[in-house]
Image: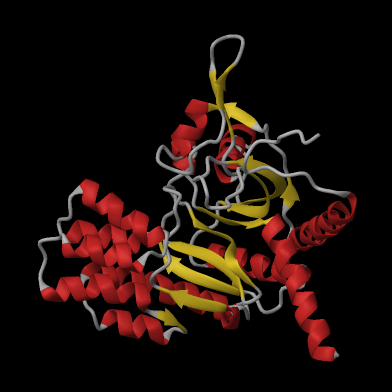
Length: 331
């Protein structure tokens, strides 16, 4: 007899569980080496707390009422609970705070897309460190974590969360149209982007800027190509990215970073530099993150901050595929 489990969840059997535990230990060791202390937060939070962090962010998979009638939700990521934790538990403490976690989160899924409703994440949050040095430290930890997982070919994409918001504001794009454009950009849907841009009452030069920017990626020379398009929003974003890239070079991790002007995260609290992780062995994004300099202020303690999260199950699949590639190359 087969007994069902909810869509987007799965059982883990002993062999895979042992491998996942080894992966978790390797990542925890990498975080510890950089001085990040592990924390845990409740799986469930008050809905109002999660909404304060990001009212248009990743949709919660499960909401329910407790016995007192309070609306609760299972967390959809760890950044907001840790922002709440830092603002609440470290009152009066001197930042920066270096925190890490390995935990499960829950998000609503789109049917038929093979997405997971329940997933494990490993990541860090650096709270109280300004850009670009704070961003560079987070990327350095991310690079070390990928190495610890055996993903030495993995690449870190670097973009800017404010670029398109400011650019669309400068072009006078309405809020509803702006939100749709940001959504297709976050999904890397360039066909959808062109369809949305064709609906805008803008000139040829502005249209070219919106359609060319997402295709600009590579080393710092991508920033030069972006500047040729002109405009205040592009200039400000490229200045921020150039400063971040210089800080990465000073830490010796710039070679692993690929500037990507088409990168946009689907969570609403990001500001400035944003990150995504790719591995040639896997078609899916392995994780991401970035700066969230306005989030802590929503919990009463304004502090600059940045972090990243890696999807453990995807890391595990990429790890196995990398090992297969290495074995085939040696045979």
